[in-house]
Image 1 (spheres, rainbow, N blue to C red):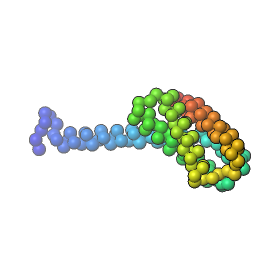
Image 2: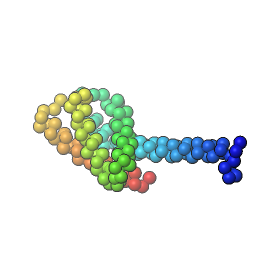
Image 3: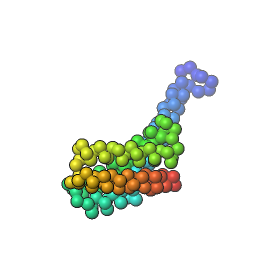
Image 4: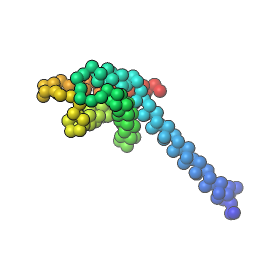
Length: 148
């Protein structure tokens, strides 16, 4: 086998493969961390409480499974968006809070139909959800992400 300097081609290829694997594991761990932060109990606790005490057209148990997955996936998406557009941590969570509120509003009006509200009640509910999502993303998740 021909040598390049003092290294064989096989050892160079092996080094590159190991480096790529290591980078891939770092990325996987980074995204796993984001999912865990987004699905943690401090993030979803207020949503559990709110869903439990509202008149609703859905089961509470599936909601307790869906809410952490929802926030975990959105936290990973927020990282993708932040890396692509080079957003700061603060701007990242401001953007994702707006996007996630819009997406949950669309889901609730087109697919889920979780509540039997009048138009006035829906307006109050959306104000409540916007405030709750802003607090969740820009305070709770922001500080968990910043200090972990």
